[in-house]
Length: 65
Image (cartoon, rainbow, N blue to C red):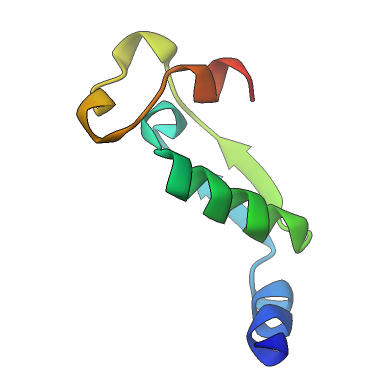
């Protein structure tokens, strides 16, 4: 497990997420874990266009970023 974390830390320098408002809680936790490894994070989204509420997305994701 440690080797995998180190591998991610060394390989993932930038993380760009399109339609951030449409992520669900599981995706949000994954993003936070990758960010903890030191990756630079860029998110894009429009809170007025949330279309995936049926699968757990929440427009507050982009509003509280």
